Every structure is written in C-alpha cells, then in structure tokens.
Amino acid sequence: MKEILAFDYGQSIVGMIDLRTDAYIRYKPPSMIDGAKRILDCEGIVISFNGTLYDLPKLAELVGVADSDNPPLRGEHVDMQIEASRDRWPPDPGTKPILGNRLWDTYRHYFGESRPDPPDCLNDDYERDNWYDCYMTAALYRKIVSGR
Image (tube, rainbow, N blue to C red):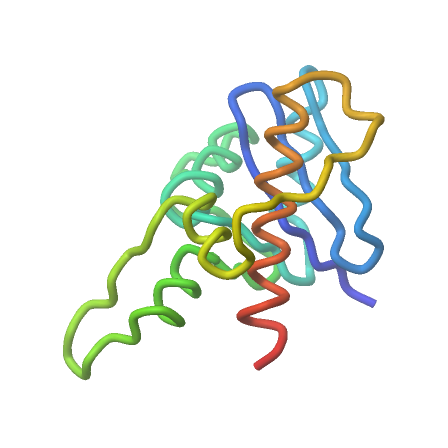
C-alpha cells in the first residue's frame, strides 16, 4: 500500500503525518534532508498547505535540486490551499480561482474553533506547531479530497 503523507516544512523541521497510521514523524537537523527525501521520493500521495509555492521548493532546495521551483516528485501532490479554495469558491468558467486563507482560517471554516491536543511526546512548541500544521492539512484532505 502506498504512503499518504501530510507534511509541513519549517525552518528547522520537516514533519509529516502518515494518514494510514496517523503517526507523526519529525526530522530535525541534521536529518531534515532525510525528511525531504521521504516526501520527494514518496510514490503515493503527499499533501501540503501552500506546498506548491513554499514547502516543495524548500524541500527541493534542501536536497540540492538545481531548479527548486520544479521539484522532482515521484508521486502525486495535493495542495490543500488550492483544493479548499476550489471547494469554497469554485471559479466561474474562464476565471482564475481564489487562492484562499491561511491554514488555521481554512481549518476553522471546516472544523470550528477547537484543535485536538498534540501528542505528549512532542518536546517543544515548535514541534507542536509543526504537528498542528500537519494535522490540519491531513484533516482538510480527509474532509475535502478523500471523500470525492
């Protein structure tokens, strides 16, 4: 079975949630490059929020890809900022779609104000913030895309 990974790139962390197991995996220096390779080499589905413009180019840059604006993905990429915008504001024929809100605003639109508690094993606020970004991205994917 191919992986389905919701991921987020941060200045000093690459985090992901495996949607098959709900396990959170984090790669911090010096292993961030391993996390970047795992995303880029995933033959399944990788899911981000604004990954098209930010996360994927940063991962490609991290592994030394010369053209980081066109990262070499082995699998499929789903950008939840694009998918949620398309879901909330379907474009009229011949028009450009609206590029929606921030991740927290988008998550709150679909799920309300509360967020679940992060796992107790996370050591610091930075890791917890990364987990939240991965979690919210995964939840949006399950709500909007996987139900289609």
